[in-house]
Length: 240
Image (tube, rainbow, N blue to C red; front, side, top):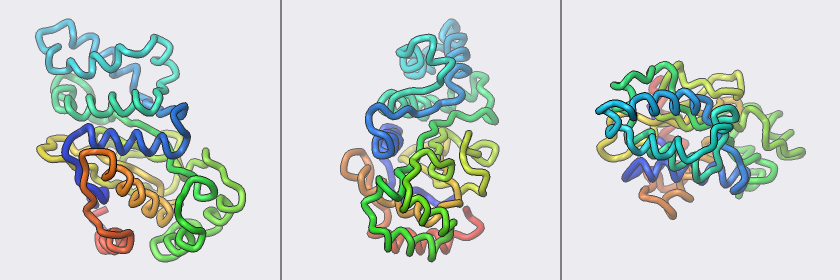
């Protein structure tokens, strides 16, 4: 699996990538959808009553910060989602060993900024990325003319581990691309999943996200420029 174009030093660094993505696409009032929130909270509460409760203490703290109605909406603000994502990564192995089903996954669903309003890239750069790396040119041109920040092709999922091909809940029906979110001493691989429908634009935006995160979090860029990252992606072939 191709890696995200930044290497992280901790789960907190990966959580910052989620936070920055949600902030970039919708501001501080943006909502990150965690479809498994209620299931996580129920299991964590059950485990907390046993001697194994200490193994998921960070998750217990994070899920109990939110009111009961959060179990229905499963929506968290960017910073709260980032903190829960960091805790879930840290305690992922314990959670799996204590009964959480790997196939259920733990996903944090947000979206990339719309090419018509949120990208720092020129229209020429966006069109070139789609042309060389793939994606629906008609769709990206449509979004450049009439921005739609809720289009399914812009949805991305930050997942605590890969599962069921990491389909994005409520996302595009096109094939998905997964990028490994790696940090030192990681035991359970986190992934970023995005649609291939706007592939070139998504990869361009992911690279720009890596640049952002490297300035604010415990992370180092692994590609000097977008061209290098794009070449690595193109050469990865079946490894995706």
